[in-house]
Image 1 (cartoon, helix red, strand yellow):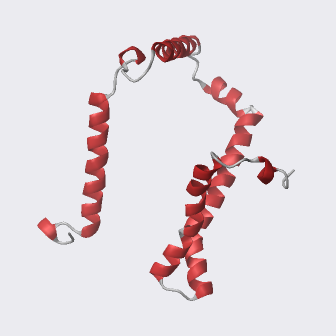
Image 2 (image 1 turned 135 degrees about the horizontal axis):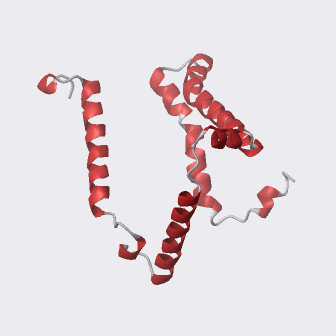
Image 3 (image 1 turned 180 degrees about the vertical axis):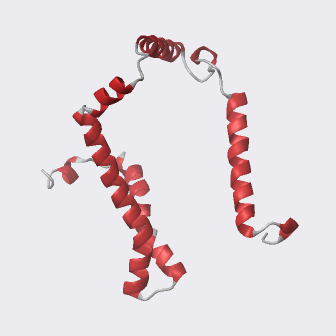
Length: 148
């Protein structure tokens, strides 16, 4: 589609992806129910539980209206916050290292082209979905025993 209607290829990708995201956003806004009571796919118990959770959250947010410097410092003094920040940073370090560098490493070490190295670097990303799918039917005891 590059050059169609004086629009470059990357601009078409931008327009198509943005248009789809906008259409899904508008459809969600129009079609989604405004409360659990109006959701047709929930049974009576689920509606009751969700309504109670929403009411409890609204009560808590009304009580804790302090968003000043003291509240921020209190959060930063919590060691769990720093722990989660560290875990997230290390997760992203691993994720982006594999995402950005694996194709280059494969290309240099195996002397392949760009397409072949991209296809080979997709192999590790095919493992987690397959693993999630098979983990429902596979007993975990045999896999967990060697790690303990």
